[in-house]
Image (cartoon, rainbow, N blue to C red; front, side, top):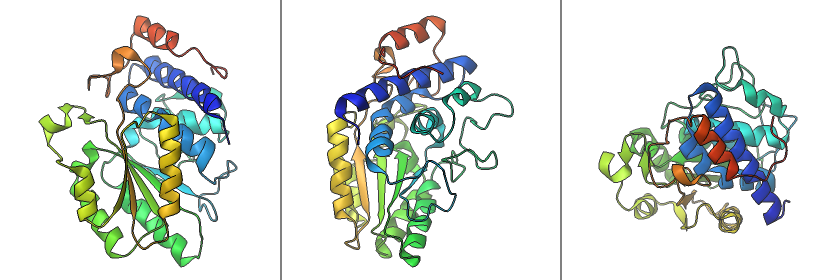
Length: 281
């Protein structure tokens, strides 16, 4: 288990990784990656039972599925910093023949990646399938997934939500990155989602709402509470209110950094705001 200060330092390093990876190729998705840095850091460094030697089946391990695959920079950084593969490989992000593609894929056999993701809406269905498999195998470990709030505009998500509740899939914890922004603007301008908490509860899910979704202790508390709530025949969702671009001031408060890369000057500014380092690649 990492202390809060250790987690803060890890988050600083991961933010450095994200902006450097996206800058190097002038492409990628820094906004959502930065917004989910704290969540994925807590998940991988303090919460999941997982094995960095990596077995694709994940038997007797907690499993994580990234559904909104465009925020791959944060996942790649977390996996590398957890020890799944050498951090130097982060420098190959989005390059020809790299295992670190813009959206995670499986044919490159990158350790830590179990599904190709990026076609939004599919990850919850996969996670539910994995959760049911664990039940059939009497595997007591849990399945976690992460979704963008804009992704919930996809119909398949709601089919999966209904299926999980109807079949009492109670070993899954689905987290929604509720930053209220997507590539074309604010969530409410593109397609309002209304009261997401009420919607999920109406679909017979248990919901934990985290108003400070970039606060490490709030995330730690939410994940611990969610784990305690498993096994009661009701699926669990965490509604995580985050800030897109968190940790880099000029990227916060706007959707414009959803899929835009910083230039040289902006990169230096972003790095200057995240000075704690575990060693850049």
